[in-house]
Length: 160
Image (cartoon, rainbow, N blue to C red):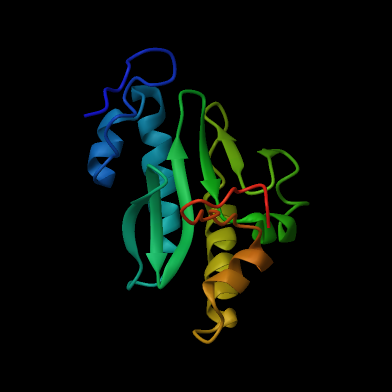
């Protein structure tokens, strides 16, 4: 049996978070109110059929595919709606820190609930317009969501 060494970067990473309620219990106390508001805004913009799951150790909503991810940190809450959606809202997000697929909402500013709802609705519409006939692979390529490279036994990942 392989031992997991406790140390820098490994504390709390030995077990994946099982539910959103467990995740919420681990959210820093100063971030809980903003996280709950973010969660409620996201939930209100999605179809009722969307289910809340844990993906990549953070909460997400899924309806056939994962629509959006969201998370809480000590000084901000993040929404992960994919790069294509962020690019559509670039001008409205100029006051917030963004990266390719992430939007950071600082805790010291009011949460832009209406903007979050529009972003989430845009992501849901993007997935819906892609249709059931489109493969997950092509949706990932279009949205910028990375895919995991699979390695076959004896195959080096650097060779093609």
